[in-house]
Amino acid sequence: MRFGIDFGTTRTAVAVVDRGNYPVLSVEDTFGDAHEYIPSVVALHDGELVAGWEAVALGEDNPTLIRSFKRILTREQVTADTPVRLGDNPRPLGDVLQAFASYVLSRVRAHQEALGDTSDVEIVLGVPANSHSAQRLLTLDAFTRAGATVLGLVNEPSAAAFEYTHRHPKMLNSRRSSVIVYDLGGGTFDTTLVRIEGTEHEVVTSLGIGRLGGDDFDETLADLAVTESGRDNDAFGRRARRRLVDEARSAKENLVPQSRRLILELGEQDVVVPVTAFYDAVTPLVEQTLGALRPLIGREAEDLDNALKDTDIAGVYLVGGASALPLVPRLLRERFGRRVHRSPFPAASTAVGLAIAADPDSDYHLRDRLSRGIGVFRERDAGQAVSFDSLVAPETEPGADGSIRVTRRYRAAHNVGWFRFVEYAAIGAAADHPGDLSLIAELAVPFDPALAGVTDLAAIPVERRDDGPEVTETVIVDPDGITAIRIEVAREGDPFVVEASVTPR
Image (cartoon, rainbow, N blue to C red):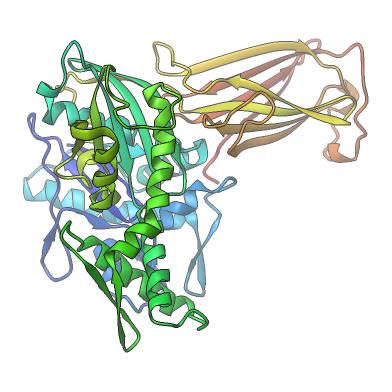
């Protein structure tokens, strides 16, 4: 049986492939109440990792409860061994991810068992469009080790575009054939321009902000509550701060357009925060998302009013749980008017789109492009300087097999080659300033055959050579957006090969 799983920062939604329908999976909490999501939380119970509703049932005051652990995946040098603090008990990120994935799959299997279905669980996973290789691989690895067959990874805004077409086919025509997906989740913001023709979807451009979402709204509201209470100078412990942020999250999620105030419990005190003060404080965050979205329209003007006029863009589609904040559609409609459409189920839109992607009978096809570039920093001038080469440009289209392969051949100019392969964000990328970076691998390659057996190349001075061997450098990006590097140094009868990829451990 097939499913689409949107692993979110604060909530995870699952949609089922059911004969052309894509219902959102209903999950019961420990009290038997049904919800259309699983809280993305993990905690310790008797030294064991528990997740989802079972973790919530341990109580909000449980010092080991951790929310938004998905945000750790956005760090530059994250690995499966990156420690996650659960109170005073660190656990490897890989184990935390697998514990959560196992819980999600247990709910999926319970649904299958109720239907008498004993087939394997096959899933399509969503990932942020601008997520780097480590984030993609760790997510894939967690669900694979938990027992699912992962059919593939799909960028979350691209999946939401499937849901848009499925729900609003009449909004697209020959004159307006594109849609901008505005995906504001709990921890990340992604926006994608998708060109649509029937069931064919082509991603034109994807941009985003790796650490901006509903969690930042919650933190802002918590800070306002502290100020309103007159306790700016008080020291809050980690548990008290977490309790306050949870209060802020609940108050925010209960906001409706008519709300005038938010009430938060701060210790024994009820604190009132005017909605206008909260909106004023978070408006700059929403403005950041509009700044990221601007390049998709293809206009340089600072003023976005009426920016969609005379374009082929049918609308801006709002998805992601944080887009439910009434301020978000209001600000976007002030800029784009009636072409702003909110998904009726913003927190489940991506999961539905992922289920459509998992359905072999949907006839929906996606041609996605790379949303992050791949480049390398190399030493030059006998180690006295560093240069940056872009190897795979952002928005590079994959080949027929869904992968990207770039090969370069050159003569080595030094006795040792030092390489730092990185992924870089499309925003602000330039030839020598690639912007936001995530490390893929650091490699030291002995070009001089006499150094082949040396284990500590750092102790070898870099020297200029005029008779270096031929080097073949290959970068491969697989259909899931995960990068691997291969460097081959030509030697008579025995080429020297160095390979690197993002590995779970």
